[in-house]
Length: 274
Image (tube, rainbow, N blue to C red; front, side, top):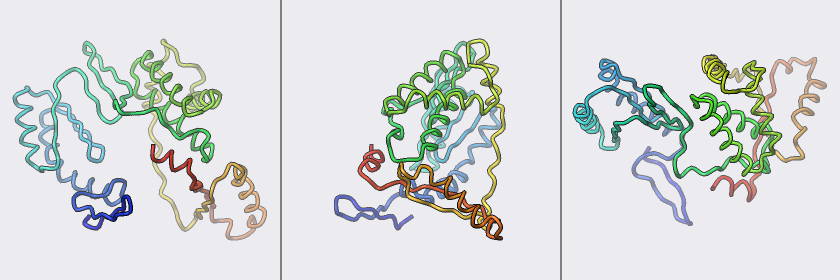
């Protein structure tokens, strides 16, 4: 944590406070530290409250009087001068990318975007494999269904997503294909409408997330290649050649997994620094 260095404008700097953003070590240290900070959980649970955390973002819901809440927040903020909790009393709250609202006793949720959020995704004309671009549409649309608690909120968010993708040069055909792929992935053979939305959404939410299978590095070989548009068919040709020459060989017990590296060009740099 005391050996973070970076260069800027030809000068080298030493970071003396905190850790480098996106560093795997910083993420691990943050999780370890927050584990010890979470001594407040017992107090929250004993009061019938809810506590959620994602790395260093904390969300607490509790039914205390305003006076008692302010007093506890002030006490918690003395645990560490670098961690400050803020309170909000009202009918709405935002946590990460989720907006929550109490509408006459009914929980309303939708996707939350910060005011500074801009509609930038990986441009469709960038030099990346097509499956990466498809995965962006798939994931964002799946989030829309999971987060939007009403059909109207879903329609609004879906069209905002479509417009953002169109601005990033995604063809309408590709967008619709991935929208439909989300439904087919969950064995849904009918379009979403006002009457079936709540039922289908609940079905999608309740489907358990597949457990991540540990990688057996003794049986898997990773092969990375620099991706160009002309290399689109390379994975299929690679596996065909592998099976042809190693099909009857003991080495065929090893599973080759192909990964891509992106071309270091100006377009990639501009996309990265937007």
